[in-house]
Length: 176
Image (cartoon, rainbow, N blue to C red; front, side, top):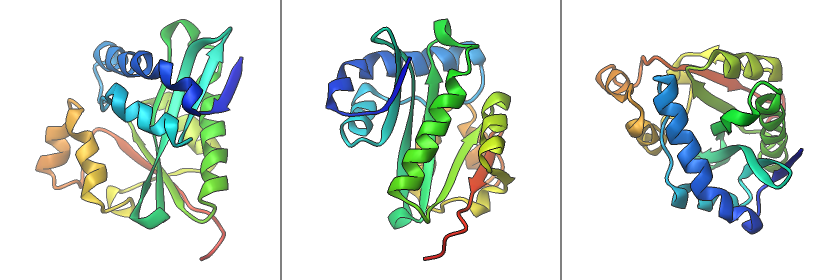
């Protein structure tokens, strides 16, 4: 199993990653924001994602988004191909994306939003705490990314105060 920071040699996985996210959203019936292959490709090219492969086959993925001039970094798009689930791969991917974020943005607040209990548990193990959405980025561009989620109407009608997702935040002890 290989888990590595993305680079342009991984671009051929973008369609598979996007399709895997879409399929997972349909199967789970919970909120997962969809991402186009072009969007995934951008994250891969910039080295702002982590890709897992097993015998050179795509197995999992996660990417980072930078908000508010690096004050906030979101971990998004965590996905594991169904045939590789149940082996602890999501935990390893999250650990690697956490390390990448701390290296690139050592004083940023790291955050994510999720409906998945397993992801919440992994985040908690990494030092994240559940928080109200008001403690996350205020940048409207981040919240636009939720538009493809089936629960967007809840988020929108509550003026980004409530959703079915849980916001989780990791704050570094390092100061600016």
